[in-house]
Amino acid sequence: MTRSVRRTHRIRRTARVAGAGAAALLALSACSSSSDTDSDSAGAPSSSPKLSGQVTVFAAASLKESFTTLGETFEKQHPGTEVTFNFAGSDTLAASITGGAPADVFASASPKTMATVTDAGASAGTPVTFVRNQLEIATLPGNPDHVSSLEDLTGSGLKVVLCDESVPCGAAARKALDASGLELTPVSYEQDVKAALTKVELKEADAAVVYKTDVKAAGDKVTGVDFPESGKAVNDYPITLLKDAPNTDAARAFIELVKSAEGQRVLTGAGFHTP
Image (cartoon, rainbow, N blue to C red):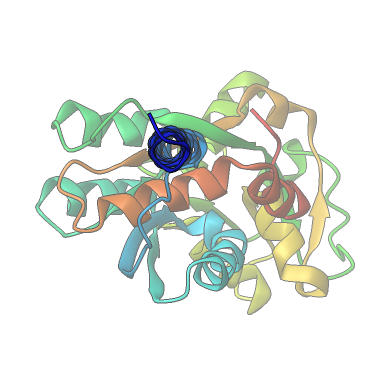
């Protein structure tokens, strides 16, 4: 074989080897790239769906101040959402829910009123207790009648207001009175704790048995008086997602905010106790 022919064969062999090597490198590169892509995909966190729309929360009247604050926080955290509230006596809210009123979340001031909803099959899960509340006597500013105990409310001449016993604050007041063996005839029974407190704020009553949180929210409009029997009538507050919630995802997120460390700071700052 001539020198020129041998050189031609060497060139061809070299080209074939180089081509094979390049192909192998390309395949290895593609495989590595695919592996990296798969690895990135597997390790990447799944993004939660963006929340939007209206969230309707039915909540006990005593939650008004703290839940309003949490609603504003929720809207800032989730632009495009709107939290609307219906604050009232828990029994009234429970009756509305079981009657078909559209709502996403129910936060009650007692397990008993929550049971009205769960027993009717209107809850989407098991309610969770998120805070507790305790009673306190609200008197006129400065406590001019020198009320220092629950027994003082039974004195003649004092106009005292209680919540109706069908609502949690009224049931708790009855429990405290029974624990102390006292009888008290109020000038009126109110349908929620805010209505009872308002009677004192407007000086239409001398005192009312309400929650510590309501006394705190009223500021200098009333003076609060602790009484030991209140420790025997502490109310647990449960919250639940409702079965026919129009906005389930946002409702779940609101409940999580209420239960979160941030939500608990707002609630304890308002005078509630952690469960």
